[in-house]
Image (cartoon, rainbow, N blue to C red; front, side, top):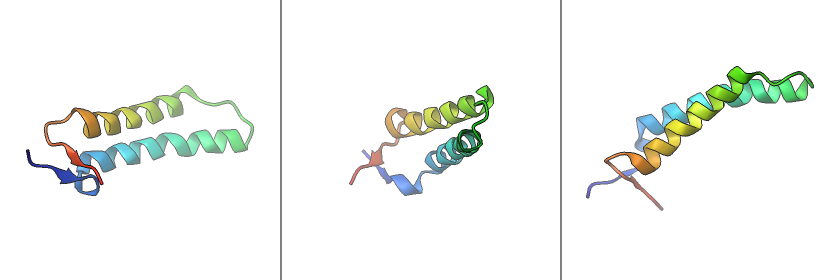
Length: 65
């Protein structure tokens, strides 16, 4: 079965970017001692879901070190 390295997967990097898009506002809210918004949590969870789906549930597996 053909594999690809993790850093060549576009979908993996999209998931990482979405995850960062959710983490940054959460960290800002925590540093400002403000309320954590549900939007940031949902974006974070959706990014993590994309990464998990890409790494473990797609047809072309990622080559592990």
